[in-house]
Amino acid sequence: MITAPVSRFIRHHYRHFNSAALIDAADAYIALLDRGGRMFMTLAGAMSTAELGLSLAQMIRQDKVHAICCTGANLEEDLFNLVAHDHYERIPNWRDLTPAQEQALLDRGMNRVTDTCIPEDKAFRRLEKAILRQWQEAEAAGTRYFPHEFMYRVIRSGDLEQHYQIDSRDSWLVAACAKNLPMFVPGWEDSTTGNIFAAHCIEGDVTNVHTVRTGIEYMMALTDWYQKTTATAPVGFFQIGGGIAGDFPICVVPMMHQDLRLNHVPLWAYFCQISDSTTSYGSYSGAVPNEKITWGKLGVDTPRFVIESDATIVAPLMFACILGQ
Image (tube, rainbow, N blue to C red; front, side):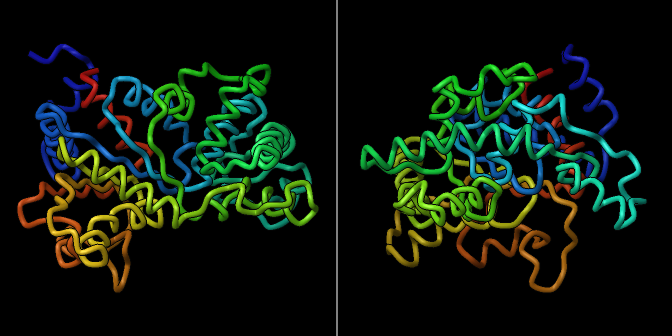
């Protein structure tokens, strides 16, 4: 008997089409974990600005997520929200903004992500001061860290705690830091923090650009993590959106098969993608999962699901179902 109100509502009403796919994918997710499996999650888009941490943090704390690959934007925007939430502005009529109104937002230092404006001074600059200190300390010590490790160091330093404007339990990055969750952030330089790092390297505040470890090193680390994890447990792949956050990590399996010639490496044991991208010519984000079979990422018998909908709606509901809420 399902007593949890959200799960009960979903299972009663979600019976067909995308809603049924949500139930099927959630049940398969639960089944993978129940047989000792691990789940690898990817975050594209602006899920942190959409405050996915409200539900994802709890998934991490309850060991429903075992590794994350995300864009540099999602990595930093969770902390932006943590330290500047009260200064964000929501623009309900964002589709109707004129170019002049967009310029007015820029002039006030309000950078828009769909209906939400991130305050540059309160968000970007607060994090910049804290992370620059970490970059410089690492350089002075002759050590190098991955982008997410620098974020973990910022959180653990306590430098930002005075600025917290939401409950830190609603930050998925704080939850990941507490677990020392394995993370992979390909293309980190395509982010505000990456731009800030480049600027400080140009100005000479940081003289060794290699203080921040690279995407190739992330692939090497992911290879090691995947081999060690799949030695004892199947690993599923839960993809929110598309782009580099999804394409980069899923390729670790064919890379090991085709380039390292490791024939014993198991395929991904589960696949689910939440996306509103349409299937089109050459589109990765909109490609059906069967296409991934031809690339050696998934097998014929791999449970495969696509929920064609808005992840800001679907992901919290699916997480609630998995958490039994």
